[in-house]
Image 1 (cartoon, rainbow, N blue to C red):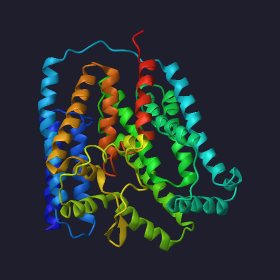
Image 2 (image 1 turned 60 degrees about the vertical axis):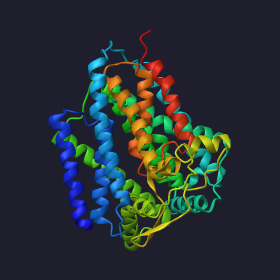
Image 3 (image 1 turned 45 degrees about the vertical axis):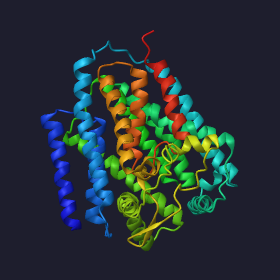
Image 4 (image 1 turned 90 degrees about the horizontal axis):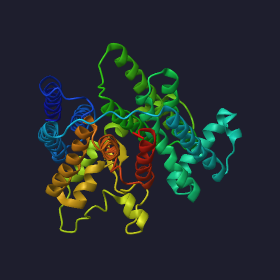
Length: 417
């Protein structure tokens, strides 16, 4: 049964790609195309490679959302395409962007240094590999035990750690020469530095998703599309393998010792990190009993409600663990929050509303209409698509504020005045 469903999902993914590219001539950057194919890939990979007693409630739910997104794109794309006129192009101020990017990266780079100082370590820990492994391991232990120290200043500066890849990605896509493109890649520097210190996968992943999201926003405005060439395929494959290798290496650092047994354990655990969210959500939804006490946004926008003191976000957000191939997993995806907030049927309505606004903004940006607001909404939409396999992208105020600060940057660097 599991293999049969996996094959059906794979066929559906290929049909989606063919319809979008050959019949609708839709871009790879169209939000619902990305959403559908990312989730169909997750479903296929989980069913094909992760052994689990699926009840298929979650699999059917996610597949249905993919179909809803497809229908929304057909309708909204046609409406905007037929009724919105294309406006004039607004240029990009490279010098202002360079200045802002370097300033934001500099502020973001203070995070790892404060992290080291607040938790009793020093820069000398980087001079010895053994001391570095010990620091890395202790940081991870402290974080999981709740003993990791932070400060208000550090929390504020973390906003710039996430703003760096947002600006970096937009800058990277908006310039032509290699020197300025390399400058855009500096947006990764704060997250890469902090991952060496604190050993957190989520910060690196979110930075990568932010960079790609803003890069695509710039490409949408510029009328560019991704072309699949052999050289580009090799480049992106090597980049992805490099990123995955980096994540695996940090998992080894967390253990504190690099051995063949630890490598085998980490690779198995990485499989669960990559695809374990599907069986976890599937199990949860199969055992979910709907009540009338819905959260009405508290779970989806918990970062805002936690900041206002209305609700409390515990570490990891969800404390219940599901055993997947011998490893505990508590990644329930963005969909659990949606269902707890609005119910199963209500989550489809809310998803349609949110994605409808995102799709409208996407086509508006193609037409160069309301470029600032459209870009801001699209940034939230892309991050929702990429980050949603973990949890709601609005679970942390650092993410929310970083996305809001993208607006003044955009107004400054792409202004008609």
